[in-house]
Image (tube, rainbow, N blue to C red):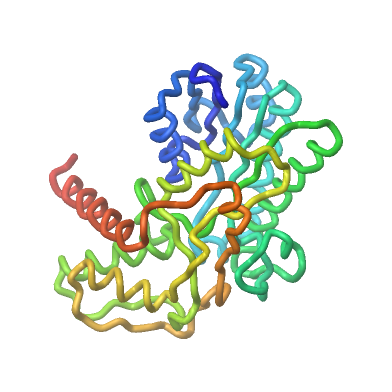
Length: 316
C-alpha cells in the first residue's frame, strides 16, 4: 500500500485524466502530491525534467500527461502526436528510473491494438497487425512507452504498471470542436442544437463504428487500485468489455439532450477503426470493475457542458 504521505508526482494534472486522478487521490487522503503546470515544468525539455527529479525525488510517478485529440487532430498532426508523446514519456520514464522511483504508472490507450484486431481485444494481440492509420502516431508512442517500461523491469527490476483504458470521457473533457473526442463532441453538438433550435446535426462517418466508453472517474479509481494491488510489468486493459455503435451513442446523447431533429451522417469522413472493444478478463481477475454506467456518464457530461455554457454566458 502507498503511504498517504509518500511523494507522488502526477504529470498532466490539468487534463481530463490527470485532474480526475488528482481529485481521487485527494479524496482518498493523499497529502504529498506534486503537480506542475506546463509553465512551471516543460516535460518536452530533458534538462528541465532532469533537474525537477533530482530536486524532488518522488516516490511514485503517474504519467497522465500526453498530447491527445480526436480523429481530426490525429490525422492532421501525426508527427506532433508521435514526437511530443515519445519525448514526454521518455524524459519522465528515464528520470524516474535514474532517481529511484518506487513505482511508475503509465497510461496508454486502446488504440495500441491493430486496425483489424480480433474482438474483443486481448493484451496478447498487441503488434499482431497494422495499426489504424488515423491515430498511428499516438499509438506508436504509447506502444514504445509500455515496451520501454517492460524492458527496464526485465533488465533492472524497475517497478511499473501500464494501464490501457478504453475511450475515456467525462469531467474536464474538451468540448472544443478541434480537440474533442466523440462523446464530448456529440454532447456539445446536441446541446447547442437544442439551444439554437437547429433541426439537423451532421456527424462524421457512417455511425457503424463501435466504441467502448468509460467515465474518467472510473479510470482514476483504477489508477489508485492497480498502483496498490498490481505488480506485473505486463500491461492490462481497463474498461467495461462492452461497446456501442456511434449511431447508438448519438441516439442516446440526442435523447438525453432532448434533441428531436435529424442526424446527418457524412459518409465521406472516416470511421476510424470499425470496432474497439477490449477483453477485460485480466482486469476482473485482479478484482476491479468500473461503476459509472454509460447512461449515467452521458447525463453527467451533458449537465457539465450546460454549466460551462451558462458560466460562459455569465462571464464566469
